[in-house]
Each structure stands twice: as C-alpha cells, then as structure tokens.
Image (cartoon, rainbow, N blue to C red; front, side, top):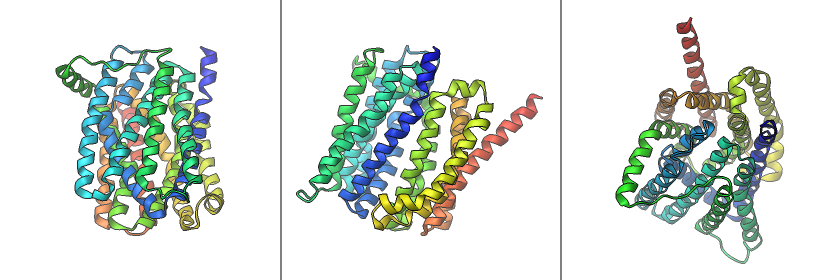
Length: 400
C-alpha cells in the first residue's frame, strides 16, 4: 500500500509532461494553420467542451467518486449510458453549427468525436486513479498527446506540400484519439473489466435515465465549472475579433498547463489532503504562489521564443490569468471534497451563482479589450473561492 502511494506521487509530474506535450502540439498547430484558424479552433473548443459536459452527463466524475470508495458495481452500465448520451449530444452540436456557423460544421462534428474519445480515455484514467492502477493511469495520461504529437510532426514537415485546413488537422486528432482509447481500454481490461453493455433499445434508455438520476448534480455543477472557465472565449468571439480571441486562448492554454499540475496533485493525493488539511496551507499554497511569480518572470521568454510574432501580446494576458490559479486550485479541492462527502448540490449552487454573475458582467460591459476579459476571469475564480470560504465559516459557527 505504501509503495502504491509513493508511485501515485509521480502522477502530477506525468500530467505536466502530458500537458507539455499537448502544448508542443498547440505550437505545431499554430505553425501549420494561421491565427484566424486558431481562433476558429478556440471557439470550437469552447462550444464543444461545454457540450461535452452534457455528453458525459457527470458520469466521469461519478465513476471517479465511486472508484475512490471501491464501489464498482454499476461502472459498465454508466459507461454504456455515457456512449449513447454522447451520440445524442453530438448530433445536436452538428445541427447547431449547421445553423449558426455552417463553415465550421464539419470541423465541429469531427471535434465532437475527438472530445468523446479524449474524455473516454480520461474516464479510464480517473477510474484507474481511484482504484490505484498507477500504470494504467500513466498510460492514459500520455498516450493521446504522444500519438497526436507524432501525427502533427508529419503534418508540420509536409505543410508546404499539402494545403492543410482545420478539419484535416482535427481528423488527425480523431484518429489519434481512437487509437489512444483502444490502447488505454485494452490495458485497463488486464486489471479491471470495462465493457459496453447492450441489452436492447429499451434497456439503453432506462439505463441512461438511471445513470442521469445518479449523476445529475455532477452534470449540473460541471456544466457550471466548464462554463466559468470557457464562457470568456464565447463572448470574445461575439464582441471582439479573431486575433484577440487567439491571444486570449494562447494564454489560457498556458494557464491550464499549470492548473492541470495542481489538479492532478489533488486527484492523486486527495485522501491524504482530506485527512491532513494543513498540507494545503504548508505545501499547496506556497507552490501556487511560486507558480504565479515564475509565470510572470517567464512569460516574455515563452512568447518570444515559442510563439509566432503575432502572439507576442498574449504574455500580458497570461500574467493576469495566472493570478486566478491560487483561488481556482483551492476551489477545486473544495469541489472534490464536497463530492466525496456527498454535497454535490453545494458545488452546483456556488458555481451557478458565479457563472450567472460572470455572464451578466459580460452582457453589461460588452467588452472588446483583452484586459477586461482577463480581469473578469480572475474575478470569477475569486468569487467562487469567497463563497466556499463564507460557507465553511458559517458551518463552523453553526456547529459551535
């Protein structure tokens, strides 16, 4: 048991390696396509990732929570329900883009399937993490970004021979996602049987309804969580221009590299943090502060040497966004803790308030400049943090 816990300490670093590879993939992407294509891609990501929350139905989080408690009885039923729910949502997303942005419809449909396979590999990862299958966890983290990287290198070195469009690159992403999922599931099945369970159309419908009854609040809170993190891009697309959208998205991607490292610490070491909350103050908070300072020092170098010249002003956005990492990671711990003690409704309530406030701010201000979007991004995370703290203080007072 002790050896397994020690091995789990490598997970945050493997997650960072994975995110670093994904970041290299983005650097290749922005050199294969132009800044307008990257803006279109960022818009697709914002819409499709939000809809992917409904595709998932909160089932990934529910499965992770069950695996922490070693409750695996209904995993295959949930897994199958998630597939059919995803197919319904992907169909709706396709029609949405046909109506709103016909030129992006094919790309949106492909990326919806990319997202399904990526998130299903994430399901394998979180199930393995909860059950302590460290090798499967590591494989699930690294497989897809590495396969994407291999394919993107081929595209990068042939970009002057072939005229690649956005949907071509996304099709490569889909192939990479399918291969990675197949490998991850095959490896997981050597230690845990994860399979689709079919027993007629009526059974599929009843299983989806049953699964959503269990996971509905996981769905609701995660819909708000993704909305808070992605709604900025949607409003940028509406009120600003593609260059501003691309600059914000480049900074957001870098912010998420740092964020994923700390999220993986929480998910891989949650029980330890839950049993000894002083570790959050002694260990996690100082690391977060160091990451903020380091990013502000390193951002000019990162943008000068890693990004095309068109993206240079993204460094100023990143310097503001990175401030949000301190409240956002503490928020994530509170969210996981509330899930663990069956207080998912509390997460939904707090995140709903922050999401509505953020939308109202954008609808009122209708901002064009990137600084406003950056400060609103930080404000939303701070607002969530304050609501969690106030709730904790109130509970402590009432307990006394």
